[in-house]
Image (tube, rainbow, N blue to C red; front, top):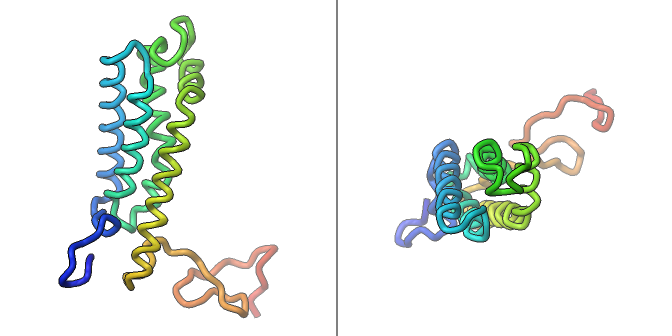
Length: 170
């Protein structure tokens, strides 16, 4: 991906397929849950820090055409971890007498900052990688639809079906 004669940068390194990154992200997230539960009685800051790092690492590892997959990955990752904990050990994310659903919602509330930070960092990394690819002549990793001055889709953009806000074809 890099130009001949120079080493690839951090932004060019990601070549892993999206499905593999999702599997790795889930594995690392559940490992962080297990590690945090070994170190403390409930899910705490160790999980939060690890979650943010996992989200960022996934955004760096994924290949450009799978950016969307990683762009939506943080919420399902956290939800999966909390659902598993809520079903098996609700006391680790909520009060002991709370049910599974209440434990999931308590966990989401308690770890919302980690979710927001992990999500934001993942999206920022993906945008930086896309901008870097554009700046270095490899085209956009994200295919943003564009329109010409006439309102018609420009070259490379998919044609749109007529709708209430788009002009009718003549």
